[in-house]
Image (cartoon, rainbow, N blue to C red; front, top):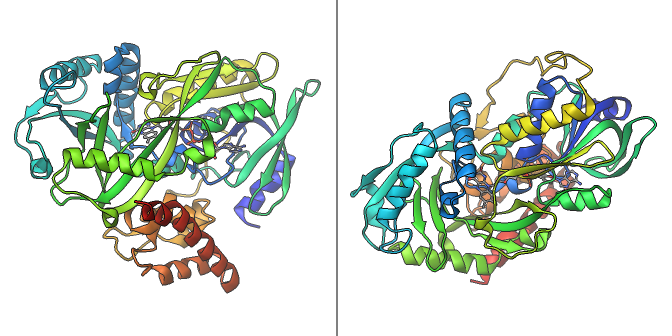
Length: 502
Ligand SMILES: Cc1cc2nc3c(=O)[nH]c(=O)nc-3n(C[C@H](O)[C@H](O)[C@H](O)COP(=O)(O)OP(=O)(O)OC[C@H]3O[C@@H](n4cnc5c(N)ncnc54)[C@H](O)[C@@H]3O)c2cc1C
């Protein structure tokens, strides 16, 4: 029996303390903490882990310099503290990183005010990062259209991708009382007051089976889907989400770019970044209020026009369609009060997290939140949950993590990539990897670093992907062809057809 089948069989029989809905950064970090505190916890994710917004971030662990614009001092202090804790305690995952700010020639974001703001930022962060510094000459200057001095300051940055960071909270937990299931959507359920138990319904997308899961309490970490889930269950909340779409373009990385660059956007009181990441430099993000979730996860030709226009304003080279290696898109879930009705620029809304408890039933909803500060948010939610359901059945440490030794995955090469990647076999066995998309996009960075999501500019990697599909399908050639066709069609829709409109 596979581990997944074992988990699903156990999930039908066992009774959990807590069910977490959503396998993004909020859900997985919380799952890890609840397990460590001794709660029998099950996490349900409808797609792949980090398949929502948590695969689309800038991967910065930062104190929120931009929130100084609105004098949101409490957020800056709190995010800076979280940033510094994460840099200190998670050295394997997070590294300090210098950023280069390129001020506008005049206006609010010109050199003088920015340097003062950076000093204030550094002070509010307890002077824990390197002191901001003016650097008139720097290697990336050659790329810039307008010559200017730069201001260096320090933040944190994930060493791996955001998807892998999400995954690491889960991969060492395999005991059936600590189950995390991807491709397992929460679909409904009801609370039995007499039993003091939720009977939750879920659909296993791999086998197509329906599951009933019993749990004493539920935590909704559904990101931008949180309100939709709550509505389907008649859950009350003091908050709701506003959605802000964010898109990055991945360009081939210029040879001389080591440091992330921050530019002042033209015409908007915001910034735009160029973040070197492996062989690409991410250019973006956009910041746009959207009303609908599903279309919001699609890059439009308008998003690309906007980003290219900004690029032309700042850089000497004029990129064309063939310079675009990849596209990256997510929707920020921004927490606002339930009655909020205004239409503010999303950057002016708080990026903090909020927690709401249903008055009648043991159901907690998490709003907002970022990768930065995920541990702090998890602690607040777990404490709130402890007040609701009491102490765990098992003392902390008794509900154990896998006793398998930490292993280094075997690696392989992918055409066009200098760095080796973990093998598909390993990812299937150890990392809940089920589809070609899981492997290329979230277990590795292939889909972000190799053009056309790994297929290659002219489809030259198709045979390589076919071999991967055969492994995924256990040697079944028909199933492998189908998997490859589904993936290729997704690339045509998400990438080719968008760029064709340029
Ligand atoms: C462009 C951009 C740049 C960003 N940059 C940064 C940055 O540099 N630093 C930073 O700290 N933050 C950054 N963020 C913010 C951060 O990425 C998000 O706030 C965070 O990833 C949200 O995580 P989440 O867990 O709430 O949501 P998600 O990652 O979306 O997770 C929610 C999950 O719930 C699942 N789900 C929904 N419905 C169901 C259901 N019925 N059953 C089971 N599962 C369900 C979804 O499939 C999804 O995987 C950025 C965001 C964007 C868009």
